[in-house]
Image 1 (cartoon, helix red, strand yellow):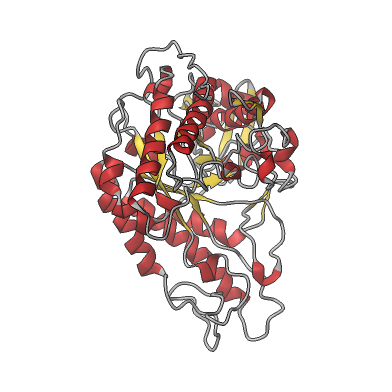
Image 2 (cartoon, helix red, strand yellow):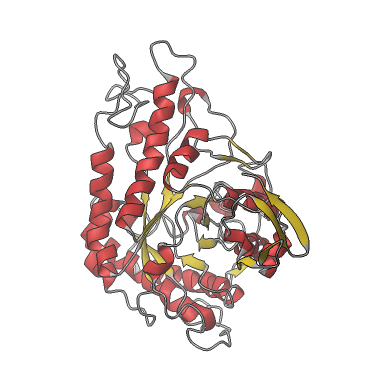
Length: 454
């Protein structure tokens, strides 16, 4: 018998906060979303790093060079983002006791600190168990009973600890059980049985801890987080057993077409797409998209709306993006058209999700500050200098979700303490300074005077 950590139940009454809201209500407040990518999910790739504590706190900067601070999260908020997805590795490199699957206390403390940065800015947070060395995501299809039972035991132990750590947090914090559970191109019945059983294990583990976790929105993942595969099994996801009514969301990812978002060089079977969208094709180029443009994106999202959103289960598009490329070294190509394509791709995704409702796209961002030629990069925010690197991607997002006018110089402490914003006549003009949209003028908050000049 594999040991499982006993749940220390949070002593708060069932549903003390957010009980009147549904998962759809919350998801509708989260757009646009942003990923703290290549940060807490960074890990050693060696399989020997599973179930040990070799990665340590330094893992945060092993794939990118900037330690997350409150100022970075403030900057993210200032661009208009309303939610942050924090991908996290737990099993791979952060386990202090392999017998009880105990998460390293320092690692948990650091993750909690960054969650708190987001909460201080009134941002919604999606906290997950990412690829995590593939301990589960690469073994969804394993059918031997011993492996399945061990996987359930580990999943229960991990999520029990996470849920206990955050049991007092309100509905601004969401948990996502996995990331991209790998399945066959056409998932076998046994694979889907396993995946759905793991989704149920995650739900049961979190709900068992009580407190705010009794009604917290939980996000379950479709097979390979692929839209086409996921819609085929909609009825089974809608039948997952959850004692909290309408508090589940489904996660898919959107990276399409591959030739536009990620392909690095021309192949014998096809060319890279530098240009995407009906208004952005470049005359004479062999690198115009030939499929998967606006109509395809709309069709994919409509399937999710019909099969999930309209049935009461909202959609978290946990990862979305496209590589922005440097075409300056290529003759016969157009950087201007490519920039417009990038902007259009991000704009269309956010426009459609806003129009349909019940779906939040969460942009992937890796903090790599080079376009790397035609390989490209999926970076928007330069975390080191607090500047915008992916100008065209952000412009596309802000075409749909304009950045708010924020109080200049407002201290993070004021946001965390919920200090109101007052005009010079002493009238309260905003209860929540972190999300206030203010006209030009002079204001007072938390004992400080500040100016909004834009």
